[in-house]
Structures are given as C-alpha cells and as structure tokens.
Image 1 (cartoon, helix red, strand yellow):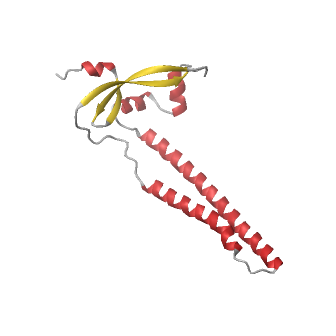
Image 2 (cartoon, rainbow, N blue to C red):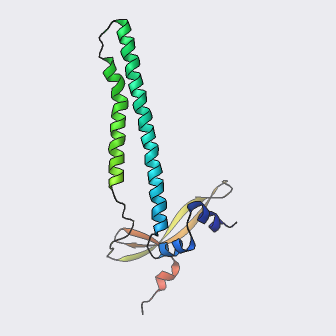
Length: 158
C-alpha cells in the first residue's frame, strides 16, 4: 500500500474530499468527522469530571468521618473538596467556551504584496535514524502563508 493510500485511510478522506480541499472547501464528510471527534473528546472530559466529582465527594466524607471520630469540628473538609471542585469548574468553563465557538476554517480575504518564499522543514526519516531537509514553496500575502506549487509562480492570468 502506498504512502498516499495509507494517509487517505488513516485520515478517512476520499479523492473527492481532496479535490474540494484543493479548492479551499471542506466537505460535509470532513465536517461530520471533525464533529464526531469533538463530541468524543467532550464526552471523555465529562466522564473525567464525573470521576473527579465522585472522588472529591468521597474525600469530603472520609475527612468528615475522620474529623467526627477525632472529635474536632475542623474546617478541613472545605479544603478537601476545594481543589477538585475548582478543577471541575475550570473544565466546565473550558468545555462551554469550546463548544460555543464556531470554527471558521476558510480564508475570508487577503490583500497586499505577494511574496514567494522557499521554506525548509526538517522531517524525520521513516527509519527514524535521522532527519532530512525538505523545501516547500510558500506564497505569503500580508502575513498569511499558503503552501503552493512551483507552477503558480509562473502563472500569467489570461
């Protein structure tokens, strides 16, 4: 199996997805795939928060029973639940801000001087014995960079 087919299988995209991506569009299949990944991530966070909440409530009762048997009125139970409780609040705020924000993956507008720049990247060899340097052509417009094909530099609109 070729490297391209392995990547296509791993990232779950088709040739029609690739054609749409080359034109700057995202397909419905890709949107659904990303949405599924986000939902799985969010459900894992919810499970973690439930576990953390159960753990903190358990710690609260253990400390409460221990302090009652020792005969102290102690304020320690508040500190036992404070750390995990704050963690749960922070995670809830993080998830709420993450799910309410709509990701815009398109470029609205880029104006300015166009520069073509060769950029070198170090890539690890497949056998992981060292690195190789790969050159890519980038088109930069007012701080926005695009990886492009060399043929674009010589393109003359008709």
